[in-house]
Image (cartoon, rainbow, N blue to C red; front, side, top):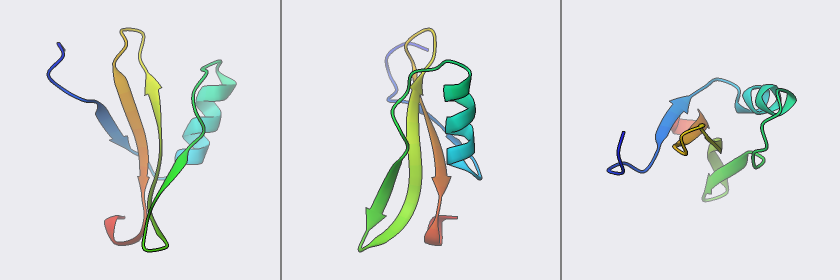
Length: 66
């Protein structure tokens, strides 16, 4: 892909179930984080890195973005 991009994002319905599945398959990734604005959660996400070093964001949209 080169280096002209920041990351690839994949939208899912349940970020926690995808996180658990990846961890149960041996990936070492950071826990999901909440993206908050004015006390409301707009999204929940985590990042994983592919074998070539590219970042992939797995995100669940909430609120007005769902």
